[in-house]
Amino acid sequence: GESVGLHLPTLSVQEGDNSIINCAYSNSASDYFIWYKQESGKGPQFIIDIRSNMDKRQGQRVTVLLNKTVKHLSLQIAATQPGDSAVYFCAERSGGSYIPTFGRGTSLIVHP
Amino acid sequence: GAVVSQHPSRVICKSGTSVKIECRSLDFQATTMFWYRQFPKKSLMLMATSNEGSKATYEQGVEKDKFLINHASLTLSTLTVTSAHPEDSSFYICSAKAGRGNTIYFGEGSWLTVV
Image 1 (cartoon, rainbow over the protein chains, first blue to last red):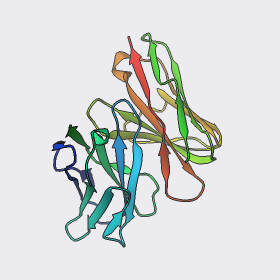
Image 2 (cartoon, chains in turn blue, cyan):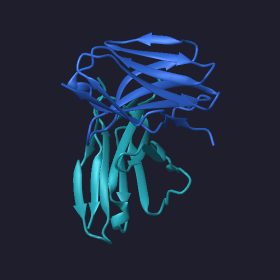
Image 3 (cartoon, chains in turn blue, red):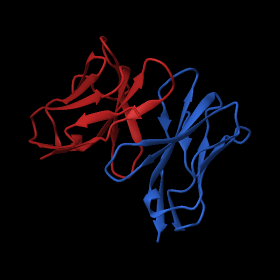
Image 4 (cartoon, rainbow over the protein chains, first blue to last red):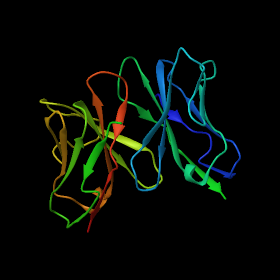
C-alpha cells in the first residue's frame, strides 16, 4: 500500500554541522507534510510543516524541502546541537484527511 | 502553545487486569483525538480515531473490545486496555486536533508494562 519511508535509520553528526534527514513518500495524493522530533521516552513534537504547493519552508534553524517530482522530503537542521539528538519522523496527509501517516523514523545522534 | 497531557506516564499492571490511560487537551477543545501505539525503535502506529460523543473508529487489526476508547468530552479521551497481556506492553501516545486547522498536538506518551 501507500507508505512513507526513510532512507537512513541513523545519522551521526558533529556538533555545529548541518544535518539533512531524508524521507521518501509514495502517495502521489499527499498534499501536506510534517516533520516531528521525538526524544527518548516522549511524544512527538511538531517541528515544521509544508504544503504540496510549496517546495521550501524555513523555520528557526530548520528548513524543509519538498520535491514532488521524485516524492522526496528533507529536513535540514543548521548548526546541529546535542539537544537535537532524537528520532525524526516525517508524516504525510492526503485527500483532506487530517490523520498523519508516519514514516519509519531516523535517529539523529549529535556528537559534542 | 497547545498542550496535550497524558496520565499516567508510566504504569505497571498484572496480566489479566485492565488499565486506563487518560488524554487531556489542556487549553483547547479537541474535537478529534487519536491513539497510537509505538514499539521500541519503531514508528507510531495509529490504533483509533475518536470524535467527541461518538464511537471510535479503529484501524484494521486493532481489537476494539480490547482497546476501549471513550471520548466523553471535548477535553478528555481515555484508552482502556482490557485483560492486559505482556504483549500489550508498549508506549501509547495520544494526539488531539482542535476544531479548526491542521495542527495535531501530541501527548507525552504513556509507558505500559504488563507483568
